[in-house]
Image (tube, rainbow, N blue to C red; front, side, top):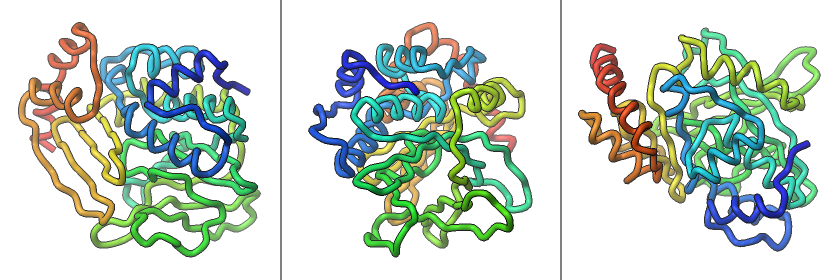
Length: 285
């Protein structure tokens, strides 16, 4: 079991602009989720540049906190889990099959990491590491009727035969319908379970993150995303505003201006050299 020591916990809280919590309750959990989503962007720059991704806590802390970078699910949720444990929460890592932008008949592997967190004598689903639409607060298990119609996320229990655990779909409300983000069950995962998933996601030539620059950040109930040069702002009502960033310079500038991601000059230059190929591929898609 990994957790942040006091020195690292203080550094993490400074990184996300959050005061030292007084108790591990639901309100604190929600505020920590919102703060990390706002201050530590989802990003796959190192994956795209074919740099190794290490998901042990030391490496994750160094990258996301000490170096003020972002990361994807294995990095983001490893960091949050360690912080939550240090604050007194019980945390269980889970695995999910991504269904966002995937046809219903296409199978997907368990390539996503999320968390089950105990707070106020109840279980909640928590996730700060999904690159698409993401709940900006904890979701109770099992979910009762929606108490807040403005919250555009829900958990749906999927009927299964002979399964050891219930299976759930996490769904987002778009402008026209409820759409699946991913599917998961409550079987606990060990750290070693995520190593091959991380290896596949960061190195396989067919991995989405090896073929497209992907960033995301949440500001309140608004989700900002960038895929190559396609910049989108998704509101809580499901409406989406889109903008095409046509040049490498515009895309690199958006990383800092819209996602708070400051890259060193060498990384910025390497990414800028790669972006014309990604922009061209988008135009041919």
